[in-house]
Image (cartoon, rainbow, N blue to C red):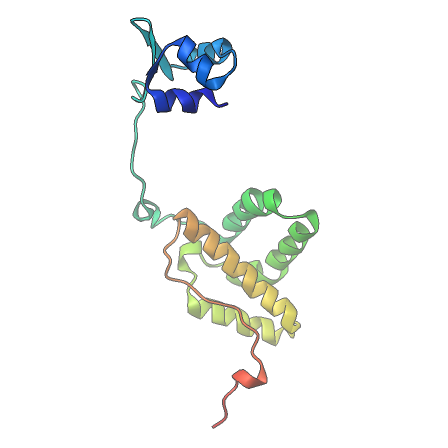
Length: 178
């Protein structure tokens, strides 16, 4: 049983009471909690300390503080690859993402900062991919990866959520004639 959660729930208790409830020897866990100042011992009772330690400061962060950070596409790619792809994807995926960034995205968007990317620059990249005669699946993967990068930094609050797009397969049933 988690003694810390139990102590937080009880607020005030004796060692006998917590051992009866937890049905185990709690002395070592109580010592650890005492040393970390999570519980206090006063007047024969253990008390859960729900007050923050002196010297702890809190601050509220909002995306507006980070609004004008100038992060290059290459730096954004490196951060994304290191902190997301490397941790959560297989090595093969990491390698494919790296190739897509290096050959399809960076050569054409390297002149932009991350916060400057908008729908027009994305449409431009799409046209460049078509002119280079990339296969439709490679174009889709390129656009989806760029979308993933943008959403990652939007989620972190580094850039605004103004640039939003989807990558969809257009079929004959979706086309309209004049």
